[in-house]
Length: 172
Image: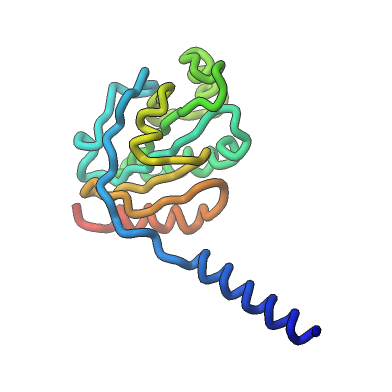
């Protein structure tokens, strides 16, 4: 019985490792920002205008603890790589009605030290265009406008940063 349990545990570990190591799905064209109510820290942006840059689209909301925990990494990446052709676009998609307030979002951005562009997606139009389902969610877009990496939730910070570096090193 003990041997059977050990075998099952080993098989389960293999499956978990195989899933975690599974490659990202094939690159797909990134959807345009759509239905944005307000842009904060920026004039309105389009993915077309960002061609030639590496873009991190970060879906977040200011009361989500998981989002708050990812922000130090996102803001550091923005500061570290913005002069190398890296752009972060935070897409603030509210979970609760009070998160639709531009004043509340702006105050949270100030408190959290967010200096990169934030699109206020109160009607979930961009969220739906990306078929997103999670807070936080990170989508890395290459210089040609293709989503080449996705990560949902916390963690994988080293892997995400390595992908940012890899994409920045590619020719435009």
